Image 1 (cartoon, helix red, strand yellow):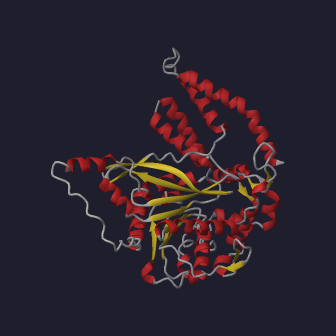
Image 2 (tube, helix red, strand yellow):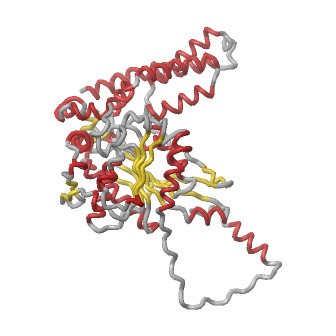
Image 3 (cartoon, one colour):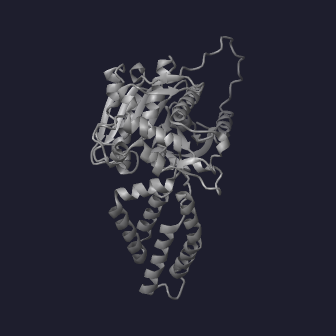
Length: 459
């Protein structure tokens, strides 16, 4: 019922939101005779803020068009390689017509970034992806909004999440021989489970695992987020935060943890900061500080865009990670795609290198929670284990912004490169190829021109 009430209220407010947007634009038009009037500027800014607070925030785009590799601008093509009911595997394919750059790109490691399914879209890791693309072939999990998934597509459990990750790892391995995996926040737990199960079966595991700001052991330095999940009984979550998707969405009837409730929780953690941010935005509009105003818009376009999570997945995560601590207690059984339960044993991982990253000021995953992975992965050689704490960084700072780019990424890049094994070159044919005509000095420029003319060579 709450979900339906929320949607009804949003529908009622929509005309007023549209009016606020139009009025703000009319009053804020620089060619208007009233544009220089201070009172009109304040009214325009007020309507703009009203529009921003009331609008519906849709899924953002990654919008990564190019990245600079060395001195060369490389074109990025975003495409879906594997599509599952609840997640797409996206590849950011790089193109260039510069032969030297192409050769350089082909030798770079392939990295699967597992984005969190905890309320926000994978685009929250836009800065992570854009930075990684300079030195890596990049894939990312793009989790779908559960309210858009029809009931006919079945249920989604935490076990399904783990099985998705395994399938995506195998997909990237099939292309490149092997890969590296990076998990940010929530997926550190299911990713460690996925790789553990692969190791237990004797499958090839990723060359390296980079785990950033995740609740491997939520008992260590519990935060406000942890305390909520740990101190409320399981029945409270079932009875208070789970609702059915209304009839106006494709996933009508699906039980979900609604995104608007998750967003309310995000804001409630730091209400004063958000209040100050919106007030600063209002003042920036009055002053005509378009740069600061645009920065505010970009941040909240991402922050306010939230998705619904399937109820089974959400509730099982609460129980497994924050109440029963099944991973660290060694009691977690995951059903494989055939429905057979398999015990998660991180100690079975032997060949993958392990890097854990934490933020000194992280208020979502406390100190030591991610580092706990090293104790669980006891069979990994100490020479292949590393931990890094980003000084002065909060939760978002370890994967986005200046501290990510200047402090964390150099560590991640070096670690992946140190444990990267380039795929073996294809075996050369034993038969001697037919002799090719030798190009004369006059013909050589033409040959070079033909090579250059092969536009959009890809990496």
